[in-house]
Amino acid sequence: MRTKEGDKGKDILEAAIKVFASEGYHRAKISKIAELANVATGSVYQYYNNKEDILLNIFDSLWRNLYIELKSLAENNVLTPHEQIDAMIDLVFDSFNENPPLALVFVSEQHHLARNNKEGFTDYYEKFLGVGEKIFKNGLRDGSFSGNVDMKIFRFYILGALRNLLTQWAHDPKSFPLNKIRQNVKFLTKNGIKK
Amino acid sequence: MRTKEGDKGKDILEAAIKVFASEGYHRAKISKIAELANVATGSVYQYYNNKEDILLNIFDSLWRNLYIELKSLAENNVLTPHEQIDAMIDLVFDSFNENPPLALVFVSEQHHLARNNKEGFTDYYEKFLGVGEKIFKNGLRDGSFSGNVDMKIFRFYILGALRNLLTQWAHDPKSFPLNKIRQNVKFLTKNGIKK
DNA sequence: CCTATAATTGAATCATAATTCATTAAAGAT
DNA sequence: ATCTTTAATGAATTATGATTCAATTATAGG
Image 1: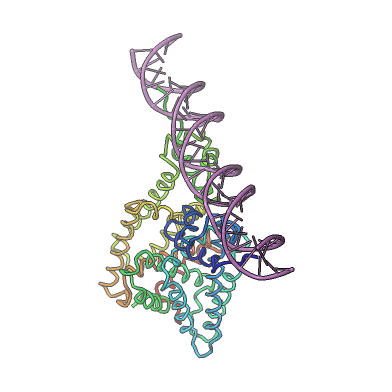
Image 2 (image 1 turned 90 degrees about the horizontal axis):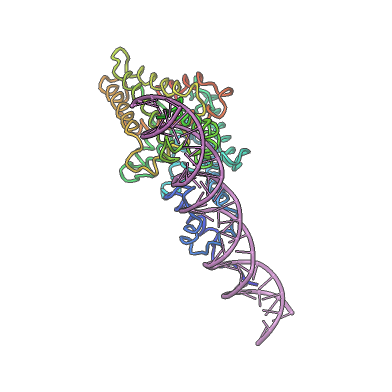
């Protein structure tokens, strides 16, 4: 019996991230992904059901990691709620720091999955939001967060801000340094623009 | 000489907004847009060069309006910089309040245009950002905004937050009331989450 | 009431690229 | 060494839907 050589599944996923990032999901050709992965076009279908399935796998593993990391920092009792929010911001940026193409896919292609998979494209996304809620509630309980803000609104507010900043950074990592972004986002989230 | 009946160009644009919103740009069929606009498929091409040109027109008029409105409120000397930011938040929400499908197109399809039209898909977008800068600088000058925040970062921060909240609202306008969102965003932008 | 011009039509064309599948290759089992 | 099973291949198939264009229709001017 013939056995699989190397880890073609992974090669394909990594190639897909690059191609999705540079062409966008719809323009990305399976043949191009296969070429980058050093695999025949048909082989892609040995590993994934179809093009969307590739994207699904990218997002599933992405949100899985984010969820696991956020969970562990939410369980860290040494951190104050403010520090947990800061750590969450770092977590998001760190996840993409070494991989701008992944950031581009993350910020640009999720809406495609969300549209097709009405019932959620990955459980980890929901779970991630759930952990975010927990952090927020702790902050309210111990009095460090303002009661004037709705949890869900805050959640989408900060994720939207992070996403947009990540987009700009990924397009031009050099002229838009991540460390400065981090610092500013932490400040704004905590204190707002008011002097 | 035969003359144009009604305003088919506008009918097509409005139909396109609905179809793009419900199907997404790539799945949207020209034939479906034509049907909704009560026009033959071919007629669409009398008014627009191609599918992307339709999207371009939607965004051009959208950003044109946003720019004009923002400009006029930036020139309003009666408002403090904080009030101008608040008014900008209102402006964005007001632009979509009556038209959730337009909001969905706005939040989901701009990246497609940005990707293809490297040199900017509409001048009004750049101009809008320019006016935002002006407001920000005024706030710095008169001492009402914190000097700890970089202008460009603030700009993408708040636009990202607005965009994400608009997305959620457009998907479910009833359970996610715009007025509450407005109020929370204004508060967060100004004061942050800190108690 | 003609005629010229421009608007409108929608079926046919055309391009693209996802997916399939018959074929070939490799590796473990006998 | 041969056989069997699974992996890998990439050319051929197929589906889709954007765009074109020859035919038709409506209006204004003469």
